[in-house]
Image (cartoon, rainbow, N blue to C red; front, side, top):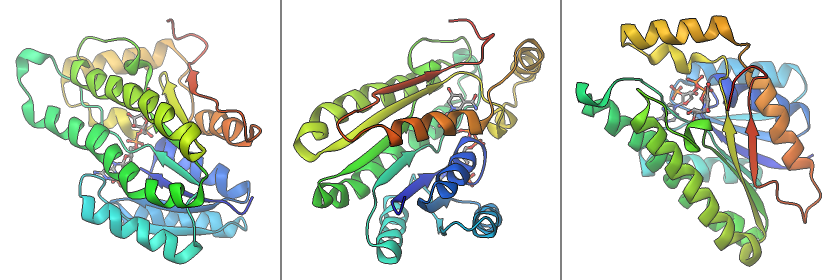
Length: 245
Ligand code: NJP
């Protein structure tokens, strides 16, 4: 309660659901993404429910945009206690289709974007000698799926970076690091899949299994946040009951 969070990718899916849950728990939430109209609507919902939120137009790929957003949040609320590195993309294609534009976009957002926000927020958390960073990796950060090779590579990078970050800032700066590895979650992430074969495959998958909701992932984040200060929930690996592993 009274803590301040920066959530990237807050305009839809897991990010928006987490913003709602954190705000309901008394956290002041910085809502960061590119689609400001979505963020304004989410802010209105949060305020309606008695919460506090700040809209931050941010492209995580652009370090200047990230730094300005972080400064705006610290200016408004005076601290950043929680960073949720959640923005991400998942177009699917086979490697031999050479959709290099999509590959680069995934590396830019899923990896470099996460590094940009971490770099911008860390000095504030180090100054506070406290903080909690959540990084959204994936089940795709633990194994590799066909059609998702580059996405999996970016999420393996997120898992690896989370492990290193925990090692380096945990004891030294009293910052907790939680790596989130969800299975299938019903969000707009799947809307970006343009390849007709993979589109069909995803639609079939949705018929076979009950996808998680963004709110289910948000609940696990609250669990990690509410753990006693000496406890670092290092990983949250959460799957639909009928998604095999
Ligand atoms: O997807 P979606 P999710 N700068 O599409 C934002 C991972 N994950 O909630 O900028 C800033 O609803 C975009 O905002 P906007 C996944 O890899 C998911 O499922 O306005 N923000 C939007 O808010 C990702 O890391 C599943 O377009 C940027 C958000 O990202 C995270 O969960 C499974 C941006 C995407 O929201 C959230 O994805 C899994 C930029 N340049 C991991 N580019 C799953 N859904 O099944 C995009 O294991 N965004």
